[in-house]
Amino acid sequence: MSGDYGVIIADSLSVNGRDFVPLSVVDSSVLDSYFAMNVEQIETSGDRTKIIEKSSSTHCVKVLAIVMAHLAVIGEALDDKDSRYSFFFIHEFLKKMGFSYSYSVPNKHTKMSMELYNIAFKGTSLAV
Image 1 (cartoon, rainbow, N blue to C red):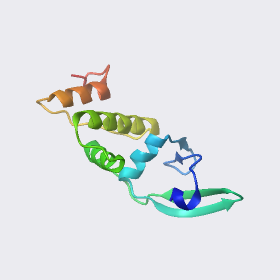
Image 2: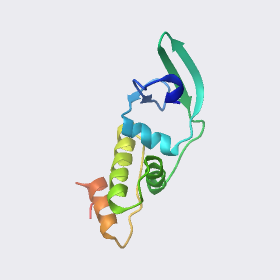
Image 3: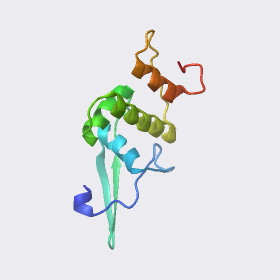
Image 4: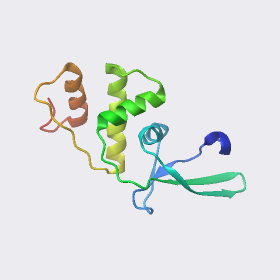
């Protein structure tokens, strides 16, 4: 959509329609990679255009599904390094937005799952 309206100057997200949290480019890529948004309103004032998008559904998704969608959007492979970065960005996005999230804790860890858990749960009882 930026091709139709120019460069994005600011991007923000609200879960209640009143309190908006500014989004970084990475936050926007996480949001756009998984959540379908519908254009609700387009307002133009001079050389500025405000586009309001809304999701009409409640989402309860696995973080891995968002990681895979995010990697596909940014054109990266599902490997240890890229998955770790994507997981970190998604974890930080969920935390920044105040969304509730939880992770299943496997009985047996791989090297990668240990690294991911240590990133996500550093300083808690869930860190391995």
